[in-house]
Image (cartoon, rainbow, N blue to C red; front, top):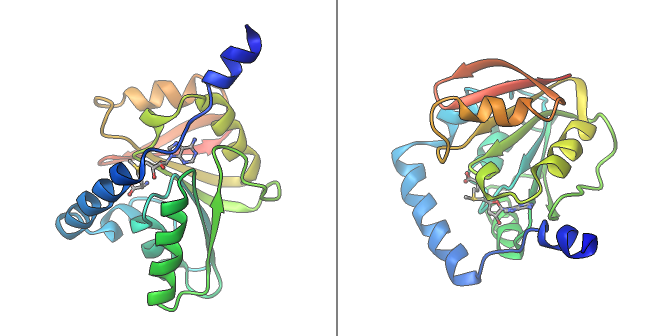
Length: 184
Ligand SMILES: C[S@@+](CC[C@H](N)C(=O)[O-])C[C@H]1O[C@@H](n2cnc3c(N)ncnc32)[C@H](O)[C@@H]1O
């Protein structure tokens, strides 16, 4: 019974057709709402080390990589092989050498305490095992690191209660749709 419960808590990648549809939708979204506008609501700056968890086709990973520059780095993590492929393609097209991809459903294999900013954008609602993922994000963040969350599937500041209830992050500020937390 326990084994079944644990298994059912695992996420699975969406179908390829669904992913391609989402990618198309995000291209339109990004034209209307340029990703830099969201990145500017986080603590990402030149030299930051960033983990974009649930990066999708990479709208925010690529923009973040441009902001952090050569002295920074962006780890783009996703459960879907097409996301990883697309991020690699976009980074290559823009000649960005500071983007590394991670195919995962939770564990990033990154060292402890190395990430300055974790992005968790439009993914929280999708996760089956939020606790394990938040634990992993907490592990990789530096002591002064920031977790930036945006999820339009929740109303108002519902996300604050959800993230805070696990006891690993403390809510600090909301900038429009972006909620910024620090490590407890
Ligand atoms: C709605 S998309 C958002 C993509 C991106 N953050 C954005 O806003 O453009 C959610 C992404 O999370 C990924 N995902 C879902 N569950 C995951 C998990 N357990 N671990 C890693 N990625 C996951 C999906 O494959 C998808 O690419």
